[in-house]
Amino acid sequence: MGKFDLNKMQSIIAKMNLDGWLLYDFRGSNDLAQNILDIPKSSHLTRRFYYFIPRTGEPVKIVNAIEAFHLDHLPGKQLKYSSHASLSGHLKETLKSAKKIAMEYSPLNAIPYVSKVDAGTIEQIKSYSVEVVTSGDLISLFDAVWTEEQYRDNIPVANSLVDIALGAFKYIKEKTLVSEKLTEFDVQQFIDDEISKRGYVTEPPIIVGVNENSGNPHYAPDKDHFKEIKRGDFVLIDLWAKVNKESGVWADITWTGYMGESVPDKYVKIFNIVAEARDTAFNLVAGRFKQGKEVRGYEVDDAAREVITKAGYGEYFFHRTGHSITIDLHGSGSHMDDYETKDERLLLPSTSFSIEPGIYLPEFGVRTEIDVFIKPSGEVIATGDWIQKEVIPILKY
Figure 1 (cartoon, rainbow, N blue to C red):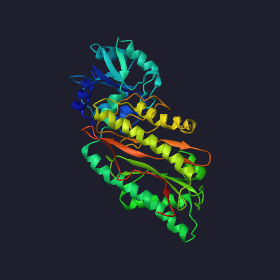
Figure 2 (tube, rainbow, N blue to C red):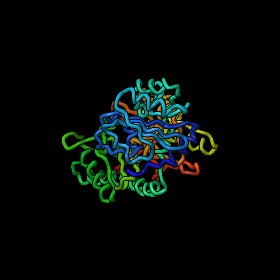
Figure 3 (cartoon, rainbow, N blue to C red):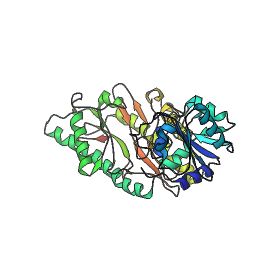
Figure 4 (tube, rainbow, N blue to C red):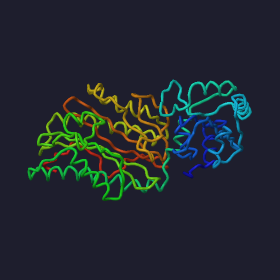
């Protein structure tokens, strides 16, 4: 709460060459608007509200007379409505000078993460001779951009996750060498404990998958469902954490290992393809920014997917290449996606996202995940002090 900044929002609106931004909600349908407007998640929202931020000048709050208080903390002129006629009148008057405005809308629902406003409301706004465009890039600029403090806080977390992942492989080795039974759940709990020891927080469940379980991207063991880890097994670990404060941003990585002293060729082959896809996607982003050219989320997905498809494994890569990272693990910025959706949002300086291509075969799955941060200068870096270059031979590590 308390992050609303009118000057910042109006500068973003001007930068996007818009006449304004109309934020709308009905019964909690637009969580993006609630977040941007600092409305508590616990608020009892039963009526429509509209908050119009013009390019310049005073905002306008259009609120139901029963629930006028919900926007009291925000600047602007308040207009109360009760009947649908009075609501329409307020909207028409508020938007009379606007030609092009943004709302939480995505043409053809290409980016469902942004499509929060129903079609009928969009039709209503358009009936006032106003062009409605997507607020996707505005949301990224407002809600997905990291502060310098967030970046500084994130770097030690990212480095720690690499240490914890490697520590987990060492833990597996030590238990195996003394013939102690070990399960996916045991390793998951070890990772949880290591995150807590460092004073960080996570959102369970951490992923530890063996053999066919590593081929399920969202598999996670629990105290009642797990596999034992044995010699000759393939192991995937996906872990995430952040500093323990409201403004903390996430770090999120995936590593893989093999329960032996050398890694069989079948695992090496698949890992190398996935790693090439990861690096190709990263290099696309870094290269575009170095050249001063724009890059959009779907293009990053295309770059990674092309590598895997050309290698003959396209059908086994069945999720997007990456997600935005903010104070939410799957944040409000551009996702690296031309598969589940077509994310046409720009990648912006001071934002972060994952690159995590994978190949998921019936007997095992490989994913390698890094986090990318675009510095304010445009330099593109991978956070964390080590990017996995090969499958870890756990019993040799």
